[in-house]
Structure formats: C-alpha cells, structure tokens
Image (cartoon, rainbow, N blue to C red; front, side, top):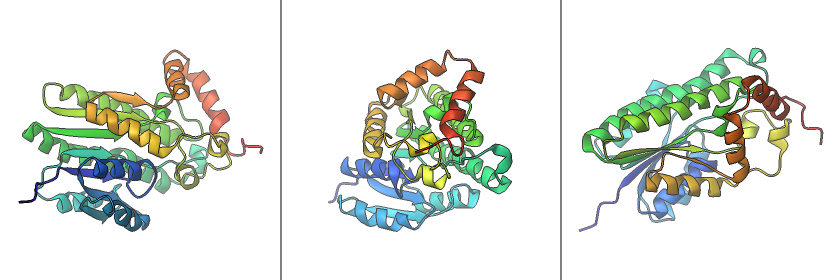
Length: 262
C-alpha cells in the first residue's frame, strides 16, 4: 500500500520564489497543486515532476473569485497540509500615471484573491487542527512606496494580516509564517516596468532559491516572520523608527523612473 503524501498548494509557482518554494515542498515529501496565470506554469510542472512528487497545475487568474474557485475545485475535498500563498505582482511608475485596471489587478491579486484563498483553506485547516501557512509579504510593506504606491500598500496589508491571522490561530496547530523578502532576482521588476529604476537595475538582488529556502524552513519551524539578509533586516529595523516622509523620499530614489543612470 502506497503511503499518502501530504499536499502543498503553492500559488505564483511558475517562476521565482514561488517555483523555488514548490520545489522545496516536493523535495520535502509533499505532493503539489501549483497555480499561476502564465504559460510557464506548464514548464514548472514538468520540472517539478522530476522530484518524484505528484504535481497538478492550475492555470488561473488568482485576482478573480472565479480563478480562486477553480483552484479550490481542483483541491476538492483533499486536506491541504501546507498553503504557500505567494501569488502577487508589482506596478511601477506614478500612481496617477497608471491605469485603474492595472491598479485594480494588483490589489485583487495581492490582497483580494490571497485573502479569499486563505479564508477557504484556513477554515479547513482550523477544523482539522493542523496545517502550515506561508504568506509572501515584503519589506516593501514597511515603507511608503513612492512610484510603487499601490504595491507597497498591498504588502503593508499582507504583512499586517499575516500577523493578525497567526495570533487568532495561536491556540491551534495551524501555523502562519510571513516571508518578507527584499529585492529578489526574479521577473518581478520586468513585469512591473521597473527596469529603469535604481532598485530594478541593481545587480545585487537576493537569490530566489535562498529566499525560498529561508522562508520554507521558517514555515516548517512555525516561525512568525522572516526577513532575508542583513541589509533587509537593517532596513526593516530602520523603517520602524524613521518618519514616514523620510521613508517615502528614500523609496522615491530607488523606484522613480529613470533613476538608474547606468
């Protein structure tokens, strides 16, 4: 009789941190349901199968209720042992120069879809009194995001929400961990149209595999949050004592279009 492997659901798993999280889950004995909204999800599925895990891929727009419902339908009645809620994307340039459709999609992906998925699977975990949740927040949520105003605000919500949910579940066997990376070497900056910014052009971004490893290990230990790298930890600590107006100006220097003069 084949032993039933635990199930991990990973969103935003087609590339970057999400893909690396999915790979770690597979290497640690989980079968996978992965979700994203782009065709590279198919390639990710095939690569992840090489780990020996059973892998199902659901190509959906997680900014929509219908997309999340399709993912939930694929899960069906199976117990989710780990939910790695990583789906999200950014949006560069000045708020008033962005289209509202783009603004709405960032909010609906990073907040609405994520919270809806957490609500549905979190209830299942609470009822079973077991489960691990890893939510990808960001140190961006600790500062006003001039020229990334909507993105940073969504991450401020997610960072706060993760801690609140963790506290509500403290008397259960369900753990909530918030992964708070800094700038990471993924497709994020190209997709957010940030390549002509100082932060987008910086060649010293964090390795997504290392970010994922740190986050995954924190989830397995049931830790509350994890900030990757001493520079990011210093930035997070400074954000707690620096006036918001100063933080906004600092962020402007990193994210203003054309700030990269190289």
